[in-house]
Amino acid sequence: MSNRIFKIFKLAVLFIVFPLWLNAQESKLAQQYFASGEYEKAASLYEKLYEKSKNNDFYFNRFIDCLIALEDYSKAEVILKKQIKKKPKDVQLYVTYGNLFERQLKDDKAEEQYREAIKKMEADQYIITRLANAFRNLTKYDYAIQVYEKGGELLKDKTVFSYNLGDMYRRKGDSPKMIHNYLNSLSINPNRLNSLQTIFQRYLSEEEFDELQAQLYERIEEQADEVQYPELLAWVFIQRKDYVNAIRQAKMLDRRLGETGIRVFRVGSIAEKDKDYDAAISAYEYIIEEKGLASGIYIDSKRASLNCKRKKVVEGFNYTEADLRALEAEYETFLNEFGRNKTTAPIIAELADLEAFYLNDRKKAIDLLKEMIAFPGLDQYVMARAKLSLADFYLMDSEIWEATLLYSQVDKVFAEDILGHEARFRNAKLSYYAGDFEWAQAQFDVLKASTSKLIANDALDLSVFILDNLGLDSTVTALKLYSEADLLVFQNRFDDAFAKLDSLATFFPGHSLEDDIYYTKSKIYLKQREYELSAEMLQKIIDDYSDGIRADNALYELALLNENQLGNPEKAKELYEKIFIEYSGSTFAVDARKRYRKLRGDDI
Image (cartoon, rainbow, N blue to C red; front, top):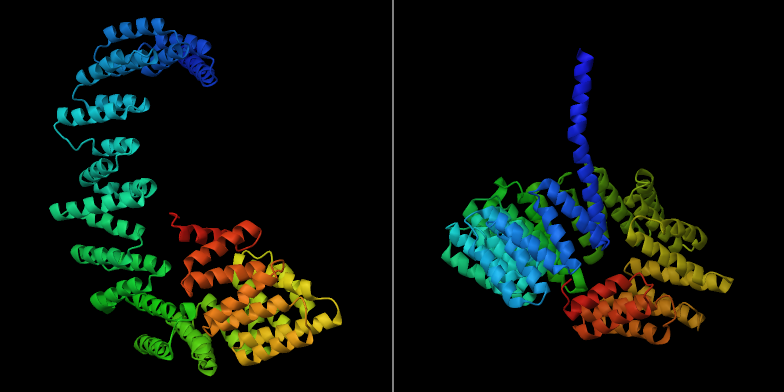
């Protein structure tokens, strides 16, 4: 008995499932015909599918689309009239009927049907949205706008379709009305803020951002309780890189909402990355002064403020002794306040760099790092970076053995990490300084595959440089003189470096290292803030050694000088363009193109 029941059940399931499966197959086939332009076959299937389903609007619309594509307008009209008679409240049918007339260039009749659709529309949000979408799909944005506006009246809520209206005005290219409606939608749903930011970022031009900013000011004045408008205004300022005003808005919101200062910190971080150090410092100082020690980001703010002040002073080589001493005092004050321990270790490392590279007190720098490395529980990465810096300082003091020992320690512990690659690169460069060129080149060749683009590029440059200058004994002698000069530059012994380079030029006139001599001299002049002399050396390379391996370096360095120190952006733009056009294979080509576009005023 139970077996018989099971068989009956299987047959019942088969009778239900098989027609559904067959319908799905026919629908898929119809879609394939439609997509490939075989409208006759598609029309036959969609007509059959619609007859079976009776109420499936998709099949009906596709059937009509096929008839229009086949220009069988009379049949399409007969079917549409019959359908409208059957479903007089289906206002989308009037849009389809209007489109049929429009295809036949009967514009007056088409307009009549479109107006009829809007006239018969009922107070139903679903119906209103579907009708507007029908007009939108035909790119009839004005009609879609009429639908949404009348729909708001029917539903007695003029803001219910604000977001949709914003979308329609965006498609029309009417920015003021687009912004107005999008902002209305934000008033209804503040959670829409992120999606609107994405839209504005994607579609607004610089001039249209002016309009957005103006409308936001009006709303903030009229609707003082709405928090989302000042939030959006702060975002607008960030997009325009107006960090002073962005931070002002962030501070206002922080006070108003009783926040912890994290909003202000984030905007400060963005300003810092964009090198607006004054704005960033004002953000961090706000947290330090107004939130105090109780804030969870107090120490981070102190550290970030110090870091910004250091960058502001040392970047571009534009500083005085007094600037450096004032910065040193701030570091000492920080360490006196928070102690010298594993938490403040990164600050100690920054102070050591300041002492070694700018205040020329390597003994103090070395003592700071030796003390820091001994801190219990110190993070291994922080320790490794400290060892690399300590090794550099030993190398600057000609303590070669101490330097290579520290480089090797980091290489061993972080063999597969970028830190290990950096240690290996510095050790290889030490061998280059010492004249062991073959071993150094072998290491550089390995490091060309480093996951760090910077290390890989530097390794490639040095490998090519050594290969280009190795050969005869006299060439090795010349290369050794040059590497010794390179070491003197690293040690900040500039007078000795100049003397070494001049002796190289005297003893080996016409040598392939001549462009490298000029390049190294340009680096020294840059460190000494003799920008005109640095530019003169680079121009010499460009003029006389355009086929040499330093040509693209010289162009790039000269472009940076003109952009940042010499105040000649047009010249910089010209040089950047020369790099990516004439030296397209250069490692500087991509960055040169970006800088060129930025100077040209492109929105990147």
